[in-house]
Length: 408
Image (cartoon, rainbow, N blue to C red; front, side):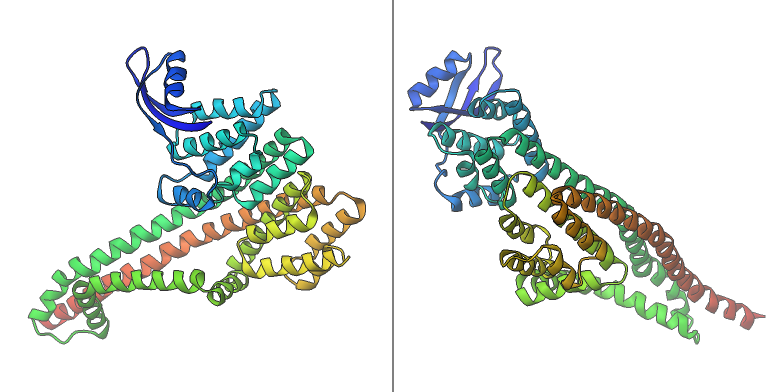
């Protein structure tokens, strides 16, 4: 069986696009006609079922498949399987209602693999940028245990909870960032274009100006003449920062360490990482993934090299017969409450339950801390902008007052 991509017309003359599994082009055309649609163009979809590289290229250079789309697909597949619909027909249903062309191609290819007798895990492994190792291992555990619909439901729950957390964080930070951007732009335009016209009067009069006014004129002239240099420096700074913190292992590790130790924000980053660690590990363990394999996956999910190294060290000690709580406590990164709850969970055989409780607690704390930070940040930004505007006003009015005194 091969996958064919088609463009067709239905009985009302509307254009329809999609994919069909068929032994050949003629059979594909006949199959489409039986469904009441008439193919205008049909060709074999690009072969990628045995190539991880091509799957990565497909995802990397064409339309992106978002985490939300994967979450929706997971929830819908879980629902269909839970209703007793077999795997291949479930993929056919999802393929018909998927809007993203790239996700359509991926689902069509996985369905073709399933028709050839391959496992769902094998089909998904060809698209690692859409289905990460965390996802693949849970699906593999679901296939081994025969509880695929339950595992997919947990996957959807996990994905939705992570998206909800990040959405709340973005929403809390959106207003201060917009305010900062608009305020900075207004001040720049004021300094580069408005202030020079006003201060030009003082320059023409050749009057001795106060120091504060001289500083204002110098800054204004620099912004007006070298605004392009400032933009280039900002771009160069951002690119250099990205390279140093993400392009090199040493820089990446240093930046992750700074993110954990930074005043105020470091505490929030740590809480988010602990919540992600706990939620991911609990979800994997509930789905039947062994502890050591789960910790290897979690190590890459926390998105912090320092914490990842701690988890790797803990996994090594667990492999040697130690408990999970002891090496985490010895690292000094995980708070005592976390390690104590993990220890109790290990002793009582309810580790997954304790990890879920930790995740809920730290997600709530992180959201609360971010709300407090943003509520404090807004008045501080208003105060800073007020001081800048006040500096501009005083710098302009001071020489005017001196001129009035000379006239008198």
